[in-house]
Length: 137
Image (cartoon, rainbow, N blue to C red; front, side, top):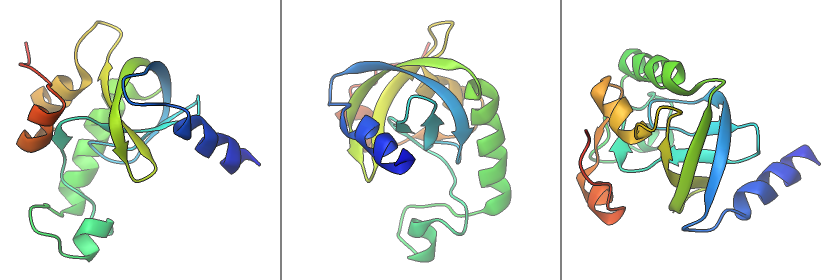
């Protein structure tokens, strides 16, 4: 029943919709961020190092960096920025069972820019342009 409720919450967020997320768990440097409100967020426009057990790493997909130590460091940085904090987000699409979103921290900084500035992720240029992320300040 709880799983169905969480899936329904994610399914109800449509592209362009604004919502809030209180982060209760961080998987890795670019998400998913698990929200108390039920959504799972993929941070828009960025790419972090993946855990070696992640699907793209197991499948040896080109373009992915797979390193448990670096992925854990990125996870800690993103968790430090977001865990138990409330984000304001706008959905820009979907990826698997996640909402891809542009999010802002309570001080109005872009979460995407913050994880880049702290070294948890890099710009994923094609998606940065697609989601019209703009410049980091």
